[in-house]
Image 1 (cartoon, rainbow, N blue to C red):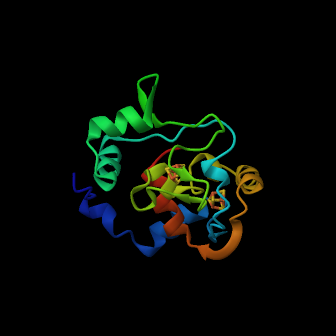
Image 2 (cartoon, rainbow, N blue to C red):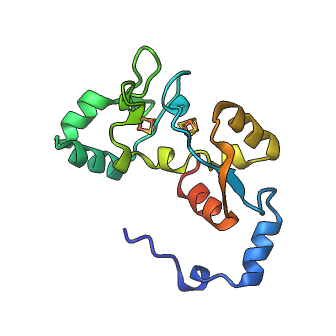
Length: 157
Ligand code: SF4
Ligand code: SF4
C-alpha cells in the first residue's frame, strides 16, 4: 500500500499540531544519537518482530529466497515472526567483529524506530529507564516532536 493519509489529516494546522504536542511530556523534543554500542542488538533475551514486507526486503538484500530467510534467520513465537537470537543473546544479524548490523539498510522497523517507541515515551520515567539501557538517549541532536511522533507511530512497541 502507498500509505497515503486522508487529505484532511495530511497538513495539520499549526494550532492542531501545537495542541497535540501540548499533551506530551516530550513536546520540546528529545536528544538521541546512537553510539553504536550494540546493547540493543545483544544481551538480554528479546524479540525483533519482522513483518512480511520487511522479511521480503531483508531476503532480497541477502540475495536469498524468502523461504531460506525464514529457515535461517527467524523463529515463530506464538504465531508472530521474530529474528533468531543466538545463545549469547546476540541478534542473528549482529556482527560482533564490526559491532554493526549486517542488514542495517533494511533492518526491521522496530530497529529503525528505536528508542522512540510508544513504551519508551509513556512517561519521563519510562524514557529514563530506556536511557539507562541505551547510552545514545539524551545525547546528540534534539529530535523534534514531529520527528519523534512519526517514528513512534510507525510501530507500536
Ligand atoms: S543501545 Fe542505543 S546507543 Fe547502543 S546501539 Fe542501541 S540505539 Fe545505539
Ligand atoms: S536486525 Fe540489526 S539493528 Fe535490529 S536487532 Fe538485529 S542486529 Fe540490531
